Length: 415
Image (cartoon, rainbow, N blue to C red):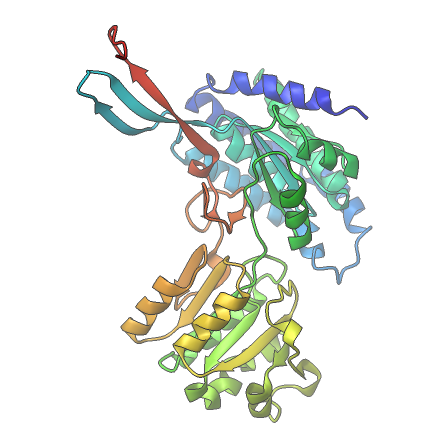
């Protein structure tokens, strides 16, 4: 199949968005929120076709599965995006030079934003809303796992765009076959930036093969360090929430580090996880303390590969460290630079951790489950960037803009 037509039409559509204006874009997003709820039964019917192809124990299953409540959440995110101020046309700097040239730095859309994603049908709506609000065309390549779901959601979006007499090519959903991914990675001159969302293998593949600039939304290998000054009750609640709230998402907890001075509190700290059916992979010291209290069928000795693993399931690594320095060293060695947390009461210890832990989001006495665009007040997110160029952390509206220099003169020429 020749995919060039898709790319050409997306590029042409990008020229039509900049003049829409905030009132029009917000009206479309509000209308789309209502339309998704109105078409929920049809979307769920198509989602059931995708679900039927996937094993329930697959880590992607939970992300793939839609429900009436999840569709309502997607609709609420669309309304949240509509309610936010547009970042377009924002004057980032403004100065008049000695030669009287008036120079402004003004925010503008990126252009055509390509997104390659796996079994996450909510991404279809989330990415469209953020791109549309910021004057960008969304060029999407979903995985075959969510093919029917993505098509159903894109159909609703196109119907809403048609009602508002807006070029439907501002959302392009490429065919699910692998060849479309290959074509997208090589669509230089048509696509301005490419964002992969999914497994580490997908992200690596896109980064290594794309001829288009890539913003990495990396995997989440997430740690929480329980310091010798940590509050036990806070720790129990935070660790349980970070691990069990939704295990298939990238902000879920993968490894607990605990100060050896609090080793006697480890059974109480992790006891709630047993009720959540969480399997522990414990290092030697923690295993010795836990073996008499944690369910035997849920406790194993850790192997080296358990540290630095994104489990995406009810599994958790546990390691005893001497102090904050060792905790920070372990995080530096194994972190994917997504989200890292400390549970502590000493202000200096907290300050050191927040300053020295290298991650897109760092927490003190709170669950890493909050690393989410909607939770950060961004309305929704296009992904969580773990790199340091252009954007870092949850990417919302502002992260989908670039800028240009606007220069006004009155006949000035350069000598």
